[in-house]
Length: 313
Image 1: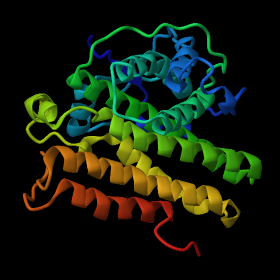
Image 2 (image 1 turned 45 degrees about the vertical axis):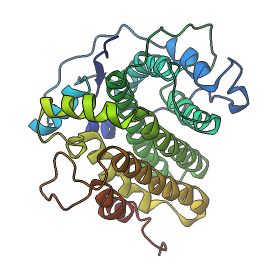
Image 3 (image 1 turned 120 degrees about the vertical axis):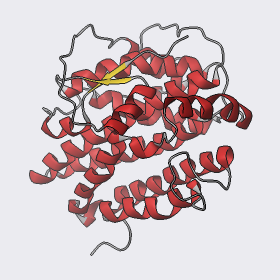
């Protein structure tokens, strides 16, 4: 099975997006009513697949960022960002779930955490909360397919986070405490889901990485790197809005801070598992271990931008 091209807005388009609060919110008590948390999620989002044609966009991404997009089969378009995200969710998530059903080494708690965050993403994408009958596509396990398909899941999660930060900014401007609390809680759910997504995208053997994944990335570009990921760069910069959140929401901010640390740690774990004590493809310093950079300067930088590096003044 081939990975389908995913259409998404440019990351900065979210900060001009028209916003709307979810019309319905999924009740987590129904998480397993379809037999498994993720099967129910796929059933829910599959009903939202749209036939909308989105327009071309004048991309502001640089060459390296476009290279990253092309490897994971992502194209950019112009149009209503929420509508575009809804269509992308409906396209990609059922296939992600079908890939999971070929076998992964995740436990039930991880599945539920992933499903919880993605249901909240579906809420904000205005996808109805019901779960019609659904049969996921059949496929066989393929490490290279998983690597690319589940990376598309990261695109969806990050775009959801960008949208939530935009809505958060509006809620803070209006001093709307209940909406602010909901947004922060949902953002934490999405961040916690992203931790699981790291384990999922790399759920194959070290041999498969060495023999299939790394050569495939090298063939695409010898210096291929997640540093080219424009959406993540925009997300990290946009986290500065969290500095505006009042101390009344300390519990939600603590959840977000912990989830950021755990997500970076999960990324570092993947690096250690596959490349060990070596540098990444893009590193200009052979002595710099990829995991060391992630657990060190990158997580610290993110926490500083978000105002979560130390006690809030």
